[in-house]
Image 1 (cartoon, rainbow, N blue to C red):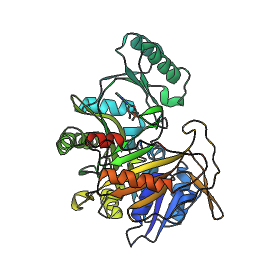
Image 2: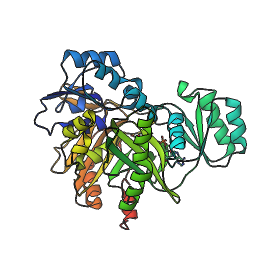
Image 3: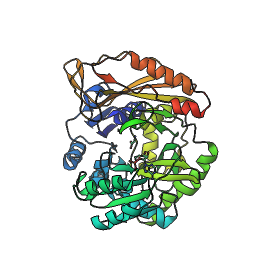
Image 4: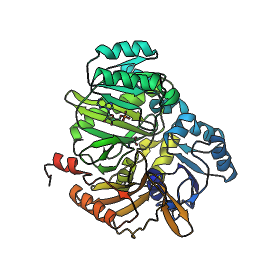
Length: 425
Ligand code: AMP
Ligand code: GLY
């Protein structure tokens, strides 16, 4: 079988490595992939948003199955285009990917179907939004409607900050057309949990829960990033909470999408906050999270390709999806300065990972035999072990054997999770 994975980061590397475990998989093309995954995939220099080129490549190379991983091609309709060309694809169609592509859509869906989320108001008019925030309760959360590289969310402590956020989105258009509508919502508190799920629109199978670390600096300080590390499972996410989420959030969401004529097939990601009033949805993503995927997929004990094919074909209920009873930790090694200004082009030295360890490359390019840094997030050092503490120690040990100039990582990945288990250092 010839597979194709659209995307090029650490998440895609984790997906590709897992797909390769199936002996029927002969080759995986990564579009565009990156120079750090050339042992696992054939990288093809086609951008993940160049939809016609992706479709033409798939047809020309007689691709048997495609996985579209990032949000932007999904929101643009990459899955639709591939399916129309006769290529089976894992990933939602455009009319379902809107659950991530428009925060206004997601909020209105939740309101209509009674799915717990923060209270909110939507504004398309700048002066109405400004009038509202001048007397709104603070803190408040201001969100651009459309995709904004994970940066379209501002937590305003004061009315002045909220007004500035609204103006930057609606007047100065810092996120382009994504900010022509804004959602202003109630500030929620509580531990955050990421739950990715496989769904064919009918059946939903949650993956192991995880905890992201979004801020750049230790102690959850500094600017928001794409994610500096993850652990799985998330100790705050108890069996009881999982049951509540299934009944009040997960199943209602896929049923709501179906009722709207927007059946969701693929990976549906629930960003949850466990508030004093119960679990609420912070955001939906129409795809695997990154770096969540780097800890979740190594814990999957069932063949990933089998699961993805079942999702695509609408027969997920026939598959027994199992998870290892272990813990995983991913420490992201980034270029110092990320997410703002950083330098790339430094040679990377990698150890050969031992049993239970993986290195997923996110941002690198190859020059001959040399791998050079090529992005903000360069790689994820991932360890799977019996306990969370062992996984954390092993991931940091693995990271300490990886070298490139200007490497930066947070030193406290997993510490909040350990504290939740009553095991802080
Ligand atoms: P998002 O891009 O929607 O995941 O938002 C980024 C981060 O902002 C989330 O991970 C939360 O930490 C925070 N956030 C978003 N919405 C809220 C909210 N209503 N209350 C508190 N924090 C929020
Ligand atoms: N790590 C958060 C995300 O993938 O959206």
